[in-house]
Length: 572
Image (cartoon, rainbow, N blue to C red):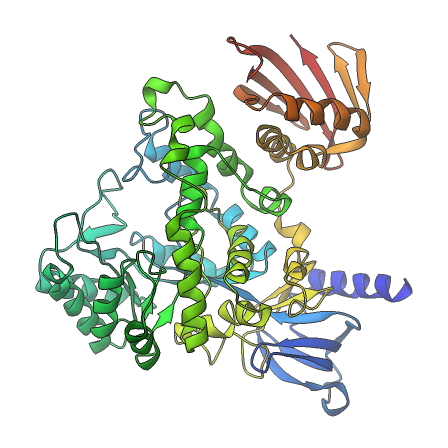
């Protein structure tokens, strides 16, 4: 116990003094070695400024006298994680892709885009809290380059490797026209010009959206794809391609693409394409869950874990359930009838799992990526869900960790500075209680993140405002998740009929009453029609459906104390 408190104190002290003391040593660490696949015991890691200056067995590493020493006996140090496929211009909420599902009549797309700008820090902090020290934005507006610049200056932002607008064979409707994330080119020359337009901004790579419309042949737009690839390579840039069909993927690889940013989902990979992927050293990013998350949203069949509810932005997660209270006449579909059209899992899901295992077994370089920002695929929290899907495909814990560390660095040409705990690399590291090579869940309970040599606690990164806590309990209520619901309440929570008539006390009473209600009322749903925030008091005007033909109207007043809901007053 004494060692635990000493460790806690020293790490906290380092966090406070991180900016003034740039050199420190972690001693007696067990390093998760993603190169060898082993756990290297009793190691010392010395960090100076933002780089690892020495690493090796404790007895062999000489620590400079001015270096702060932190004994991490019993702890594991893993490299920071990489999400190899995200989009900053998408929020993960219901209204973020009007090109696919235009719900702008309900909530304007401009509101979603403004939310993203205002909550950039929240999104970035959540990535670090999940141990994700690098994100790769594989296509968006020119403002991506501004986000990268911000990330370079802010230690609470992950590293951002970015490109600009997708060079596309198709122009989707309803997206931002002033700074478009996707630009259709009509011929090879336009493709080359769009590559050249980005060169002054120093993209980390170039992205192509290789879309084949119904009735169109993949070879029709191949000259555009090839021209963009050739121009990028001529300027020393790797090329990432969206090509989810077997034919487009094969053509893209044959013509020099460096990275496939999605799984092939329409056919099982054959030896010919597997050989091509291996011989061309093409990176394969599976994004196993993004399509499934659309299906879950539009059927309202969610599978969000306690981890998702904690680390995803609660407002974007909550927006997905708006479908249950939006007027039917305003929705382009009936979610109750969508289950026939969107089975979970689908045939495509199964094909992607098979193809990932085939690619891994062939020796193709696999990089983990989520496509975060798409509807239902939340920034930060989605990567661990992707890991679980990769394990379901048959990948080992080591292969999964490699996909999110050294493979990602190699795949994007950054392996000299990132991807593993080695001398000379950027000090992006995670302090863990357990060995993730044995138990991936170690990655769901990260207490300390070292990013560019700066130590920070998870708690310091996650916002904990009263409104966020109340929103999390609303989400859990609508998900009918009794454990997630109760997690937002203090153990001795008190319930009142306004102004002061006691109607309940303690979590166990709530567990019994609300747990039974969640089971007995399958269509139970609460809509907040108005919310007032006054310090630690949140006043929600609520409309609850599921008990009959008419909604029940009520006002709930939540008083939050010490990060938990301590009192609730109901007015009916």
